[in-house]
Image 1 (cartoon, one colour):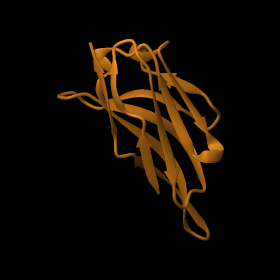
Image 2 (image 1 turned 30 degrees about the vertical axis):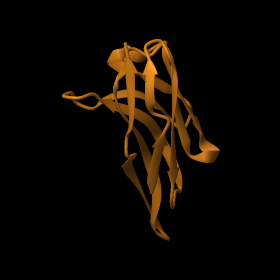
Image 3 (image 1 turned 90 degrees about the vertical axis):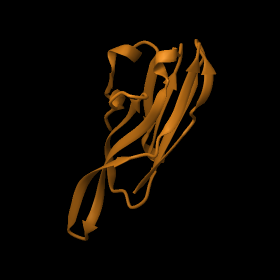
Image 4 (image 1 turned 180 degrees about the horizontal axis):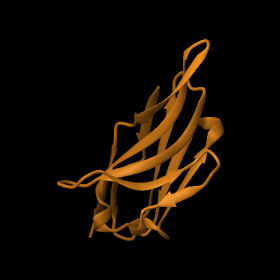
Length: 123
């Protein structure tokens, strides 16, 4: 299974970006999908997560500005980022909990990460 993220870039403060991440491979189903970010010199932190039932959760720092959504038919998760601030500058990583078929009689749940996409917000 691979997660391919895209949509990062350079934007001025107050601007918007939309990140996308698509899972591909031998997927049985996908549970939670989410976005994390890591700024220089800081630990990776949760930005937003969406369950397969479309329940969402956000970091306090992005509530009201970011919106996470998913298209289950496309195995894709999106992050719409509005009113961007310089402190949103980070590498953004997508994450997914994916059920794969290990054998004809056994499935397993595994945690996968995308390669990261850089978001830079200039002041």
